[in-house]
Every structure is written in structure tokens, then in C-alpha cells.
Length: 151
Image (cartoon, rainbow, N blue to C red; front, side, top):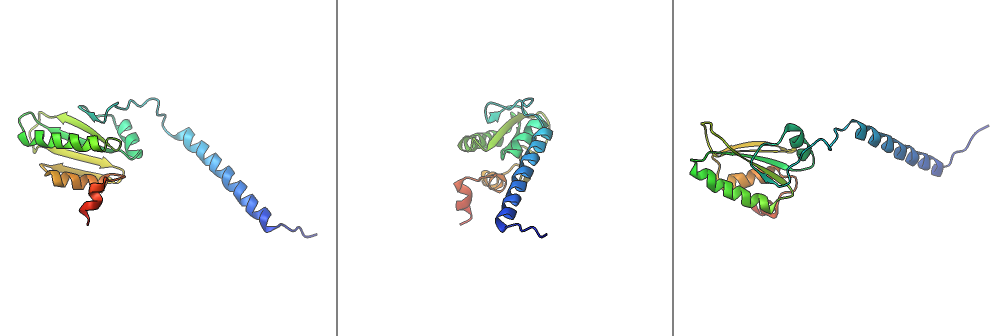
């Protein structure tokens, strides 16, 4: 005896299998993902300390670009770039976390480390144009300025 299965039944079974499989996969992903309740995220997007690695990884996975700005008190260019960064970050507050870290070390300042899920760039004594270009390369959703610079 031969059993006939219609094309509709096959398509319906495929959809049932896909829906069931995706539900099971989602359950497994939720069970093994780190709990976000233990994360302490900053309330503002401009802070004067470094966040922890877990918080940093969580924010990067959510499309946030982390900007670590190292400066010294005696560096005049640092203050200009700090003001520039604060202005730029305020315009893109939903995408950038700026960590302003005063350093007592010797070296090249100002120093900016940008990290996103698209990559990482280290800029030392960079111009404002170089900083903007680096943000354009690394931000998940770059501002309109970035599209205009390519024209």
C-alpha cells in the first residue's frame, strides 16, 4: 500500500520543524548566555573611568563603540580634542561610550582607542579629521557626515 503525501503537507511539516527548531535553539542560547543582571552599565555615555571587560563586551555586542581617551593635565592639545570628542559623542549618544582617563604616564598624548564589533583603532596625537574618519570606519550606524565624506 502506497501512502500519498501532498506537497502542502510537506511544506507544513517543514514549517513546523523550523518553528520548533528555532524555539529550541532560542532556549539554549538564553540558557547559556551570560546574565545581564550582574552587569553595571554607566548611566551616561561620557564617563571618567574605565568599565569592566564584561560590560565592554556586552555594549560592543549591542553595537556601541567604546572610545577610551587618555590625556594628561599638561597637554594643551588633549583639552582641545577632549572637547571635540565630547561634542561628537553627545551628537551620537546612543552609539558611543566615551571613557575619559587622566594618565600620569609618559608617552604620546592625546591617545584614543576605539573599539567596536567592526574592529579596533589606536590613534595617538591624531587630528580631529583622523578621529572622525576612525569613528566612521568603526561605528555600526555612522552619522551622515560619514556618507558625505565619501562623495
